[in-house]
Image (cartoon, rainbow, N blue to C red; front, top):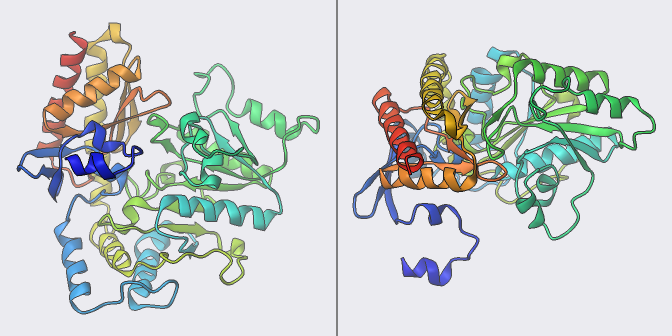
Length: 417
């Protein structure tokens, strides 16, 4: 592995926790170059909801490439783009009675967020955006300005302005009514709060520590935005595409955001793709006002369309994710209850789950112990205190059991010391 040490920047991170060289990946497993298998409860940080090298998506991709289908087309019309838009409308938007136009902002989640923030400011003529404690929205300057993590924010090197953080659900452990502070600032002409163009929120904060907002809280936030003429942006980059059960993570709350940011698993196969969905009346862009060289990666359009057809033509995947997610949640709760003196907390919803420890040091040791036993999972939270589980949604029942056994053994090995 000397070439990585010699040439790759110190900014690398995941490779430090998993110091092997990976070579192959199939389904829910990654394989090191020596053939050692690792059960993947990381799934590309949520970019591989349908597993590694999913055979349905792989065949569609191979067929497209073999016929010399267009690869790069900026925002030109292509057959692959048309297929994606038609499939998105037929399989996702129409069944949910959602009406959105689609912005292709660039290849990653931060691009989707940047587009939403820019458009919100253009539509409203206001500069300020409300974000939430422990939020994570990306590493570019606009996305960083609405991110909570101090280490990531400090990397900007300049002041991050025009964004104001508010308490996320349960930030005060129920000691105060929801939105008490936010509403008071909005209603008080002497508060000094600039009139917000938008609120941006994750329904489950992944990088922030698997903090799952309650449905009532989300409905309350939507109502607040409506009453104060504030646009509501849901960042569904990590929690969308079925991660919490339904395709969109906000569906169970019954809300209709003004904008939705998608990336990661929207491409299906792990290829770069991002979409910003916007209500039609918000589409006030000038041609080329937001653009980018890689906003039209057609092979990703192909695998995205195939994923929507294969997994969202019915509710089987949603039901499976909900059921297996409850199984994982119950198992994590059982582990937490087995060590009352350790103060563990089981967190999350669907296939976004976490086990919170007293410190990042302990959580890191648990993840390291899991790796030694053949399981990949990472830490999250402001102090890396949460062992975070993001398995592929295509995980089998046997793989669920295998992963939970490894986690149980890893926790036991660390806490018994």
